[in-house]
Image (cartoon, rainbow, N blue to C red):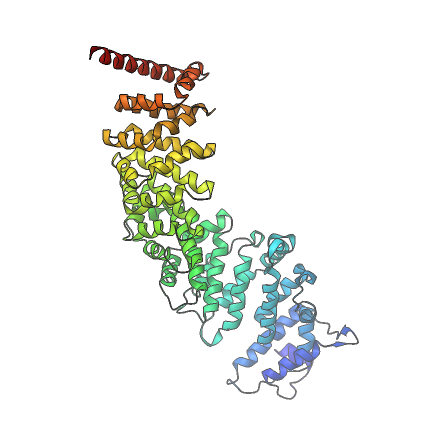
Length: 547
């Protein structure tokens, strides 16, 4: 302080903070198109800022504080080279991040509030790009410049301020900046202290405003969407609670609070979706008995009136149930979860894909998982799914149904009762090859374990004419599966199946033609089938002659 007194002279007339801010603005006005020159070094500017802070500490709030007017505009200009006239613009393409970022970061902690807000605004605009610019070279350069300027350290310092020393508006702009910056790979991976600071704002009820909570949630989403290092880092802290609730707990509270603006439940569901997408099958939460509070909340969110919330929640559950049987156990243990999932299939196409994926995950698990899915609404949804306009949906539905039928014979009767089988046969006859293949597997799995009553129902539904269409399929695997189904029918209902085959025009001729199929397994099965038909024919003629 004594050096500053010596260099600039004794204190002049006392000036209030507002007077000093006006002095800053006056000093930065251009004269004849050129900025007023004030030569000084950044080091001198930092010393001046320290002097101002020290002077404020020795005065009561509201009192005028003495300060040397000529020093401030000179030192300010020396440090920032008039950035607010050049960089405080919506045209971010004109801003050089390598020049602007270091200065703006320095301004965040050592100037008046007005300039801090403007500096934060410049940083937000530099990273808030859209479209092709989002991951373009300009944003990459900005991310590197912010990493070099140690913005994460500065943000941690400012976000951790509470009470009178905290400026919630500046904190809000920093959160806006971080929500964009954490998605930029060149910015690097911040320390855990920053995530702890951000997490304090993610709880809407304790955040200064809903906007703060929104930005904090977006910051975590941006991190979870990043590279594996970023995602793993977030996953490593979401269950720690040294300074507040875990992210999963925060998301649950947001999803269940109908009083919040819809943007917050959307962000909360999206956050859990991205976090669970990054979860591995070895995650300790899947093998422990600890409660997972996000599960009931997400299951309820599947039926949320907002489609975006429901979609993120359903995708989160689809990622979760793809991991292990323990994860599937956690889903089916939630009361009302599966009926909500299967109702979502027919609610909106946005929900259909993740809901169908959940069904597939369950049906590829244990018998208990398959039973839970089938008995709580999946089989009732099958006609809708198998007739859907999307080929991908139909294919996945047929694959899921084939797994159900292979799992337990009792579902064959349910399929026939709900008139699902005729829809499957229609796919065998008319669907493209990729879908027909899955439909043929459905038929084969159904016939394999069918009871005599089930077989009669299948024959009445036209299973033999449908399989006859497959005989012309060039895929040996599909042909083999179809022939296996016919073989089972011949064993379980020989006379009725023989009659159906002979009644189908040209089917016997097709079988004769396929005797010499290049695939040995196909040709062998057809020879056995023709021999069996011949034996049945001879046996039938013998019975007739004897009578």
